[in-house]
Length: 285
Image (cartoon, rainbow, N blue to C red):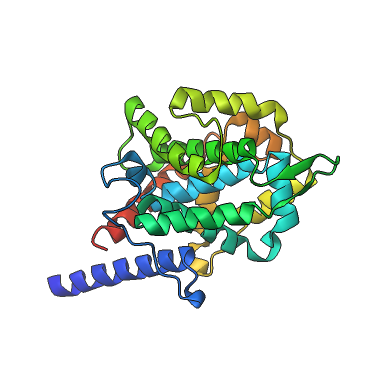
């Protein structure tokens, strides 16, 4: 009986891991998960290793980051003008997740190659906003906004759904570590602690806006349908958790609703249970 239960347990773990890896790796192109290296840009005891290692909090934080980023007209224009987001939103999300994994955990040369590749792509992206204002993807201030959105969202999601909350000093360490990636990409004047990151969000608010294009991209992000129909309810919970994570002002700009007061505990509990289940599944992998 115990052997049978162990077999079921192992099969369950294998099935969960397989589904997650299929979600984050384009298996049709032969992609494999990024392997953790002792020669990564950051040591295994770094805060960035801890925060970026939790699948559910990174997914929730990643969606929140995208929703924040696209409130900047130039970020939105870059996606709108130079991306096939309508037909390959999953591919875009995968590429972002893979870059984060490679620069956090990958062997140093792999991480540096990923950074050079992104910088080369950014160097060829530019255009004009609807009002004629020019933009470039390699604008250091624009890259700083993208970075701040990610750093704030990833950490906020970890603090909500990770297995161990960080202290203020550990939060500051995370921001300082992650800022090294933003700087390598060409971002300028990056905050390196929680106080300065919160200030950067407040400072940028007057430059942000939302229009019909913003709402269309947000809808495509939030309405992603998983290939496994059984995962749809779980994805819906995770997407609502991402919306709930947004600052109130950002949620209002998007016209999105936070979970009703009576539903908030259910959304948080469901998301935490997903995170706990995935940590269990990957524990021995």
